[in-house]
Amino acid sequence: MIISNFTIRDNRNVFIIAEIGMNHNGSYANAITLIDHAADIGAHCVKFQMRHLDQLYSKDALNGTAGDLSTQYTLNLLRKFELSFGDFKKIARYSRKKGLIFMCTPWDKKSVDKLEEINVPAYKIASADLTNLDLIDYVASTKKPMILSTGMSNEKEIGITSKYLKSKNIEHSFLHTNSTYPTPTKDINLNYIQRLISTHKVPVGYSGHERGISATLYAVAMGACIIERHITLDKSMEGPDHTASLDVEEFKELIKSVKELESMLGDGNKRRISQGELINRENLSKSIFAKENIAEGKVLKKSMIEIKSPGHGLSPQNISKIVGKKVTKKIIKGKAIFKSDLTKTCKPKKIYNFKLDWAIPVRLHDVKNLLEMVSPKLIEFHMSYDDLNESFDNFINIEPKCGYAVHAPELFENDHLLDLCSENKSYRSQSIKNLQKVVDKTVLLNKYFPTTQNPMIIINCGGFSKNEFYDKKVRNKYYNILLESFKKINSKNTLLLPQNMAPFPWHFGGQRYQNLFMDADEIIKFCKTSELYICHDLSHSHMACNYFKWDHIKYTSKLLPFVKHYHIADASGVDGEGIQIGEGTVDFIKVLKVIKKSYKGRSFIPEIWQGHKNNGEGFWKALRKLEGKI
Image 1 (cartoon, rainbow, N blue to C red):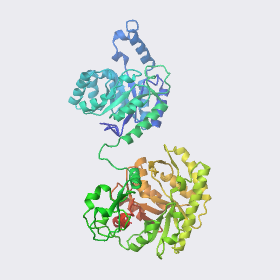
Image 2 (image 1 turned 60 degrees about the horizontal axis):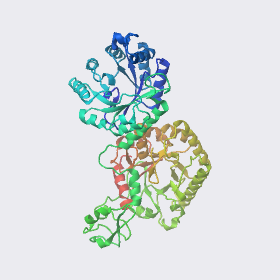
Image 3 (image 1 turned 30 degrees about the horizontal axis):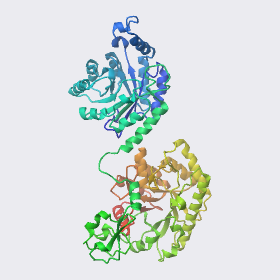
Image 4 (image 1 turned 90 degrees about the horizontal axis):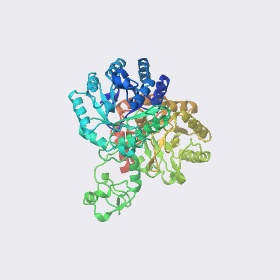
C-alpha cells in the first residue's frame, strides 16, 4: 500500500502516524506547534479528525435536554475543540511544507467532501466506523487507500468490512486497537496482530492508547508496519485523548526505539555473519593448522594436522574434505591451512598498469615476501602497537625501490583506543603520545626507503561514542579539539592524513557510533582549516552514504580536491566493510571515473579485509579487477 511517497510493506520500515486528533483543543496555534514537534521528532504523518455534528448526530442527541448525559459531555467537548475548515486547509499546507503527510479521519460524508477539497492522499477510518459500510462506501468512491482501526469490533464484523473493501478493490490496512483510554495492559492482546495478518493478507498496524511506549514497540516486533499514537503538548489538558497520549519527549523516544527495532528485526532470511562477528570469529574460533612441515605434492593425513586458534584458516568442519588431498604448495609447520593450499591460487603480476600510484598493504612480517612477488609504487605498513616496539632490521633486509606510508594503529597498549578528539584531557594526552610514537617510527623507516619524502601517516582520529551519535550541533567542538591535538604533534616531515570513517566502527568486537569525518562538508571545512589532506576510504564512505542517504558518487566528487590517498574496497549496508571488489554494492564504474579525473600525486591500496591471506591473494584479485580503470 502506498500513501503519498511512503510504501507500507512490512515492519522493517514502519509508517509512523502522530495522531493529533483533537489534542489541539480547538487552537490553531496548538495544532501548528504539534505539527512542528511531529516533524522534528521524525514522524511520517500527522492525522487530525473532522466532524460535522449536524451530519453525525441525531436531533435528539443534539438537543441539550433530550440527549443522554454522556453524549452531551462528548458533544460539548467536540463543539469546544472544533477547528474551522479554513484552519484545516492551512494546517494541511503547513504539514506538507514540513515534509509530513497530512491525513484526517472523516466522521461523516460531508467531511469526506471537504477533505477531498484539501486532497488528502488517504483516509483513516475510526474504530467507531469500522462497521459503517455506508460511510466506508462513500470513502471508497474516492479510490484512495484506507487505514481502518478495529477497536470495538468483533472478528465477524472485521471480516465483513474486509470482504467489502476487497470487492471494491480498495487498498487498505487494519490497525489492531483497543478503544479504551488508556487501555489496561491485560486488554491489549498483541498476539491478535498475527491473526489479522494471516487472516486478511493486508498490511496490519497498531493504534495504541496504553500508557508508555513498550506495547507499541512489541507490536512492531509482532509484525505491525503502521504505528499510530496520539501526541499531546500536556497530558493534563482538558479533553478525552490527552491522558492516553504521548507527550513530545515520549513520542521522540518511541520513534527512536522503533528505528532501532527496525534495524534489529533484520530480514529473517539466511543467517549472515556480521562484520563484527567475523572479527571475533577470526580471533576466537578454531581452524586447521599444519602439525608438521608438509611438502608440495604430499597427500594430507589426519596425523599431519591439528586444531588451533585463531580461526583464519579452514574450519575444522573441513577435516574430512581435505584428508587424502594433495597440497599444491609447501605448508610450514604451525601455519594455518587454507583452501588455496589445496587448489590453484590467484597469482600476482609483478607490475600493474594504473594512473594512480598503486600500493599494497603490508605488515612487518610479510613485507619481504610480498615485495619479492610485486613491484608497487609504494607500500602501506599496517602497524600494530607491538610492531612499534620491533627492530625494523629484523624484517626489512632488502633494498626496496618503492615508497612507503604507515597506517597508524587504532588500538594501543592497555586497550587504549586512539582518540585525539576526546574531552578527557588525560585520555587525549595519551592518544597524542601514542600518535607521536607512530610518527617517530615512521621517520625511522626512511632509512629503508630513502627516496620517500614526507611519508603519509593514515590516522583514524577518534570521535566515536558508545551509545548514540552526537548531535550535529556539537560536532564542531570535537573537530576543534582534534586541531589542538595535531598542533601538539611534531610531524617531522611526515604527512598526516585523517581517514574518513564509517558510521558504525567495530571496537573490541562490538559496535560503536562514529561522529566525525563522515559528513563531506565537515571534512572539507576541516581540511581547509588544518591545511591537511585526507585518506578517502571508499568502503567507509559508501556505508556512510547508505546510512545517511547521501549520493556516493557526488560525495566522492566533492571530496576529490582534498584527497591524497585512497583505500579501495567494496562494501554493503552500513557495516559490511572491506568486501572484495564486485561483491558488495559500490558502483565502481561510476566512482572510479570520478577518481580517475584527478590522479596526479594520488595513490591507492586495495584494502580487502583479510586480503593478506594466501600470500596476498585478496589483494591480487582486487588489483586484477581494478587494473585499467584508474
